[in-house]
Length: 150
Image 1: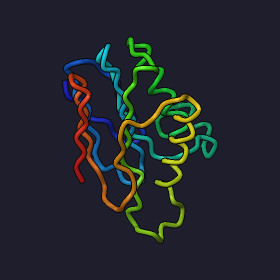
Image 2: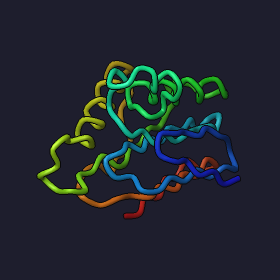
Image 3: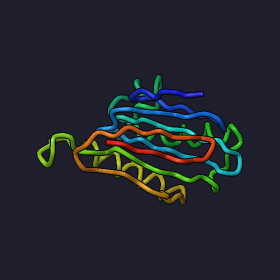
Image 4: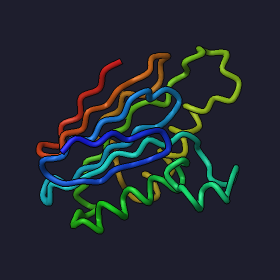
């Protein structure tokens, strides 16, 4: 089954599912996959830190990197995945306006992600981060393959 993940959302699934997200600009696209249980998920987080709007973070933690990433990992583990086996990839975190972008949202999203991964002893398998282009991600949960276009 094919699933579309909108900005500030995520989807977890199993073998046979394909998860797609569009328009990854400054947002973080995080894909995590357990090749043994063949479960995984994709998060499209828009902002780095939930403390900027705790009420919004409570109703939708996927908007923020610091609350969305743990939620993604938990839901994958709830479906039978194991954190120690996760293959994790990241995309997005760009600067669509170039070097003059005032708030540096993409850089901040990536920085928060790296801190969370470091604290959980998880390494990125691969990344397509930065630059000025928007990205589209296709994530096949039958194989764990990720295709990124910009």
